[in-house]
Image 1 (cartoon, rainbow, N blue to C red):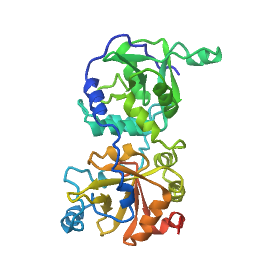
Image 2 (cartoon, one colour):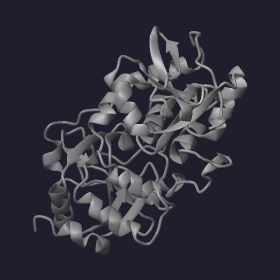
Image 3 (spheres, rainbow, N blue to C red):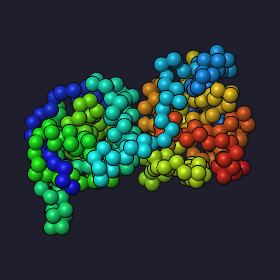
Image 4 (cartoon, one colour):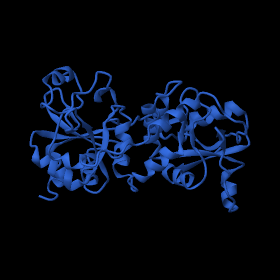
Length: 346
């Protein structure tokens, strides 16, 4: 608790401006109304990964469907399969590892997909807030905890921190040792912010590079689409034990799900797959629209339910499995691991 800050009072118009503007430009997209109907029927290779990517792209999708992804797309092997095992940057204080690492990749002038990558990782785990005085004493006395804020474009942004290093950056930036840090469940804090009049959230504001302004409109939409139990995201962020694959398959039966769709020149809707080096075809699946939009490919999220997914898999026996949340952390599920899902609606 002995980590310190003060409540900023100045208007902050530095490098975060472009970040907020970028995030406002790309909120979660709404897919074509008929795209979900196409899920069981149209399957094309939108993206490939591994050394065989070029070969798979040259092989091409069926005539009239969506072309393969552009070379600018990052391959799956370049995205972390599991969360980092470096869980602390300050001894004794556990970071929000996924959020911390997403922020670490930000350039000085973030692009929309890069801000969405931060926003998706903000939707899990915990964050820290900074409180004037001793947070434990204030709570024991039944007093409220004043939340630190900054002002940007005449709107208030709540200050939150991903972990110990970010809190130390804030200490160095303002030199105020009269406050404490308190861990808060991230989604609960975001819901409080969304219910109020603030403009959004400022994450790791004193860190350079690695800070972001996430606007309220993006957060509100993201919360609308969020699994209230955070089943899949929580499993993928945790230690990858032998039981995780089966647990993810069980979660797929009940959690909200999305696929990636793109409309071709002829109006036909294609659903994204990944191609493995050995020629396998894996259907891409997403636990939240931001998981897709963070890839920056221009695909549209299409919401489906577990029965539709099972039907799609049964109708195409050439699909060798699923890739869940390919922006990472991700998991590959083989077809022989999907029997509890395949049984739905059969």
